[in-house]
Amino acid sequence: MATIVTRKKPSFPIGPDLLGYLRRYKRERDLSVTYERLRSFREGIALTDEKGRPTLWETVIYDSTEMRELNDALKQVYALLKVDGDLSVMKHLYVDRIDFCTFGNSTPFRIRIVNAYNDNQDYFYVKKADASRIYGLELEHLLSPNRINYITHGSTLIEEHIIGLPGDAFIERWLNRPDLRPIRIAKELVKFNERCFIRLLGDMRSYNFVVLLTPDFDDWQVRIRAMDFDQQSYNGRKNFYLPQFFPENTPLALFCTQHIRPETAQQYVREEHTLILQRAGLAAERLSLLLHDMARDPIAPIEKVHALRAGLAEHFGRDAYLRCESMGALIRENLESIRRSVGRPIVAELVPE
Image 1 (tube, rainbow, N blue to C red):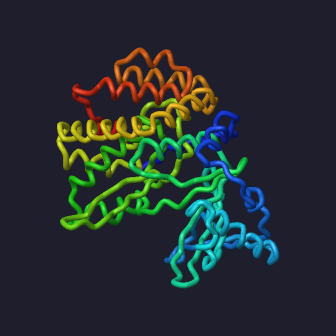
Image 2: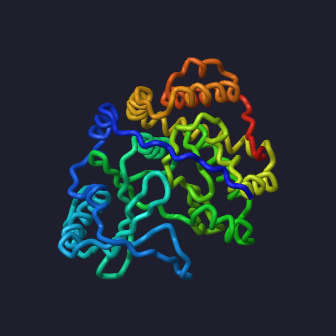
Image 3: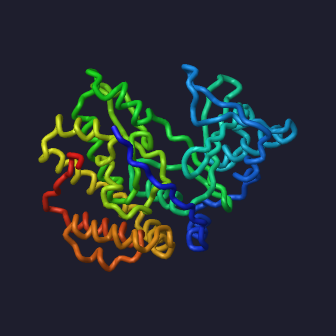
């Protein structure tokens, strides 16, 4: 099946308003490791998967003196990310590997941290800071059922690893397994689709989200989490923010149409709207500050804003969108739309175009 090619999105610097927000909520921290420092590696070795197939990553090598210093510095970063900098519980950890990826907008470094006592491993990522990506991370933290750990330092962004089975691997290996209840999968797909749409997170193809499978006392619980936030509020096409319309996700969209009725899908959409509004209410002050800063930040060309507002105005049947001049204003208007829709049926679009 053909793949829609996404043009590389430009990176936007962190402006003074967003920087003030990050400092207020202790996201901006002093770090001894920066993205540019990690770029000073001496050579790279192609990294293969467990079957010997090439990956998009390469393991990078530094001079021995620099590697010793990086080991301590990266442990400090991990401590800030996990336990607010308490190094006393991190003495038994060491940096096992540093990988670099040239694919995608953020060209990240992936750091593997290992527990010397039991060989348990964890990862975190060092990336170039991009304002729109940070808005995406923060909106995920505030409006989704998930919490995101990340910190910034100037033009450097540190992100925790998001655990889960990549969506494309889930489609291939798990989607039609008899021990998973189809209705639980379909329900989560509908809710994830709606979460992305309301907060304008785009490009959620199957390889940009993960699926978490948790055994319960009577069955498996399913949760879908975004893991790539590069395309937060940049594209001007409405359908770019609806995962159901990407060709890579067609098996998931068809799965939903096979296993749930439109009336049931409407119920799940309403449930997710209610939860989004509850989360927005609990984080009202913080969300208001974030959207205020986002509305003042030119993270998308104005022609894309105008194209998207026209699509959203038609979708929700509200001309109020046509007064919006920023992506932040459009997200605020989306929240207002779902507030107004309480008590009215919502049509869930489940079939790809």
